[in-house]
Length: 248
Image (tube, rainbow, N blue to C red):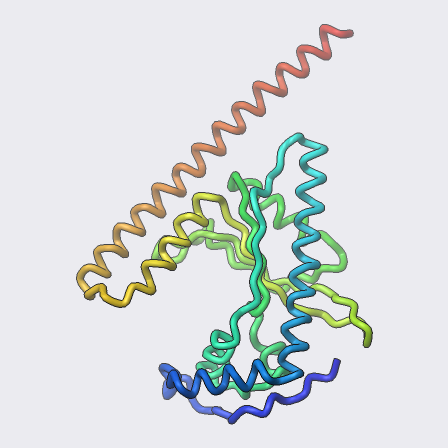
């Protein structure tokens, strides 16, 4: 696919001079994107890339279910970044509004979120995905071992996956976020509270401290739950070995 230029105004300026984008201009740029055939084709391609990654995760989950009688993945969700979000990001980076600029510079347009039950499942699923020879690992950010200052925890992977279209194979980038149910619960609440417009600075700082404290307690609970599961697995393994010995 040839990536034609979307005919939008060029806004190449220093990011420091572009703190926000005017709402009216943002709406105009969004509409121009939505009416652009190259942009529509690009969004279709990202949706196809998401489908490829989701299938890989679902296959691994099915295999683990048969092999270990347990599903490490609780749920899978996905999204393609909204046109206004893409526009904001291009604007802040001082990039031209083109399909080429989007595909070359924005690694998180397509996103897949994998929710696991336990922390060790996160690393197992990430390792199994990274080993697949048709998937290229571009970048890893481990916010579980190294949480963000606000307490956010998750395992992020930027991967490149080939998607086959009528004109040939195109490598597409997808961001994969892998986290536990508890981490996802915290992140959802944190995201919701960030967009509350009527909170004064003092209350905002207090809430941020409380969220950080909650994140630490959630991380501790995740580790306790994993230890409990490991103990139960050990008991089950000993029971199975005992039954094998008795049969012999």
